[in-house]
Length: 122
Image (cartoon, rainbow, N blue to C red):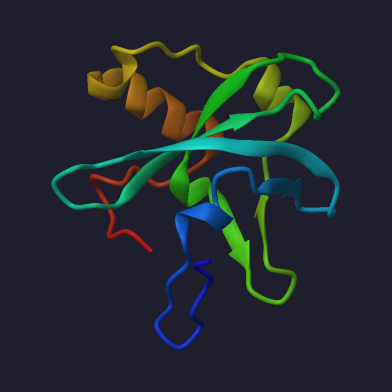
């Protein structure tokens, strides 16, 4: 079984898919369903998160820029500043959204995340 290696700064994908996401107050808000990864760089661009646990305001999956999530080393979990209001008003996405820079710009602005194409990835 693979695991995180703190010395290398790596984490296995088996610890990301299915991981619970918490808000900044520590309340469970959803679960990572899958990642959208850039095949050229190998970097994650988006986490597709099932937020039904977050009061089921907009049940289903929502694309969240990867850099809008933070990994809490001490608690070994993902956190985000996503609010109920942001979730309710999140831009919809479909299979073509991933190649639409206008949609990407809107989703990054919506979640207050720096666009990956303008900044270095963490």
